[in-house]
Image (cartoon, rainbow, N blue to C red; front, side, top):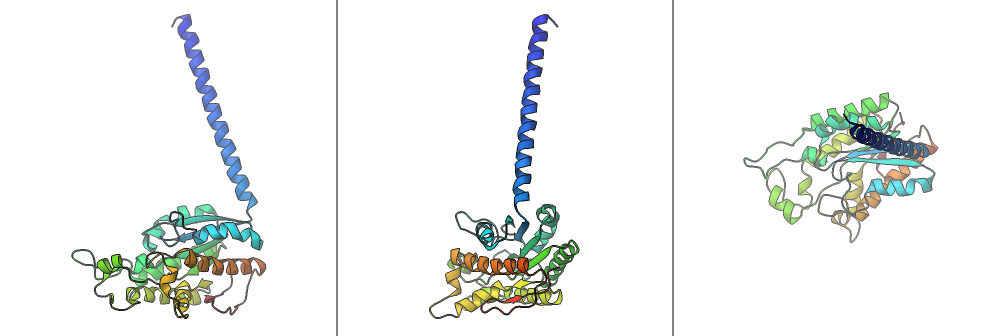
Length: 277
């Protein structure tokens, strides 16, 4: 190689080395910043769920509200949204380690059920069973509870919110086993999954916020309807997300103040306040 070639190669290698050092330096800065941000929070919360948990456009979902408002209640929290649209507890089992355990959480909020209970009668031939049986649903949730309690992670279970008919859902699901002529007929299967979760919360002594019950109770109020809390018959709207967030804020702040809270009866808040493990 001639002298000019050697100088060009040396210059090129120097540039590459400089770029490599710059990239490594930038990575270290970002890593340090991320570590500092996590250190600034004394509580890491993972919201683990389906599309009712996941981000949805400009809608301020409950995870966003927790992130913004918990510091005002004395809880410096990093809130990680691990909601994925369309997921049931079988999907959740496959990503539990990566999306939950790997984040080393202090509190995990778990809400599944809508996609587990769904019977896809719109398929041809139509499905006749739920996507995930209620027995498998319970077994999957038992696994999450067992692993998290072993790691001394606090758990908040939430029943799925109830559903209401809209035009699109009637077209897709308006046949047996569903009851298209009944206001609550879209919940024929779902209500059994909510009931199973209540049983599991009680038997495992795990805190529960009964969102299904809270929404249904709201719908009984004069001039009110469950539809008032839903965007599209399925996903909570701003008002619905606000209700979910308020109940979570109350339970989380109570857990921070009382490491081993005793059962508390709160009007309008359906919970099973078991011992935080």
